Amino acid sequence: MLAEAENAIVAAIKAAPIAQKLKQVDTLPDLDGDSLVSKFATDAPAVYVAPAAIFAIKGAIVDVGFGIACVARNAGGQAAARKGDGKMIGMYQIAETIAALLDGFKAADVPLYATGISIMNDEKIYKAGLQVAVITLQGQAKLPPSIDPAGLDDFVTFNAQYDIEPHESAAEHAKWSQEPPDHSTSKPDLTDNITLQE
Image (cartoon, rainbow, N blue to C red):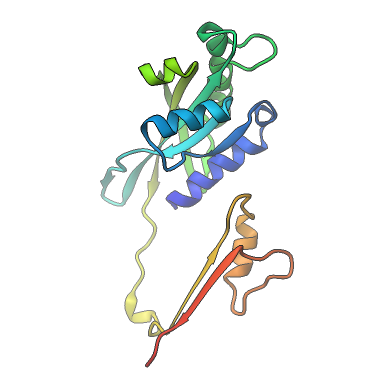
């Protein structure tokens, strides 16, 4: 549920008209500190999707949250990076457009709402000439039903299929998971098949 929701958010932004004004739309890279600031500076203007740090659960209801980082940079300085300059989109324009796009968006059956926009105040970000706003999306979803292990056959074969950017659609992934897999219109970038010895 959560992975599908994150993928749906990225796909919705990529399909929106604003994507034509961005250099990058993706999930937040596995970087931190100077490496992340450097990536932001290279990719700006860009939008990155990241999960919240905590998904609280009460009963069977999950509080779902995502942060959408809206990154802008402009040779005209910090004000131009925030406001845009008529040639390059600014952080405000990115954040407002994405917040409006995703407010009330249903991501893989999880309704999400924009609940705030925070401006990142970080010296490294400013020194790199960046302006970054983070949109907070929140919603609630019911936990998926648990699996009864008694109804499962013994684990005999492990099969993994890896999809590397640019990702195929969920429909293509479903075709790969069939038995036997359907690779008639697309195929995984990598596969692993391991049969356990009995």
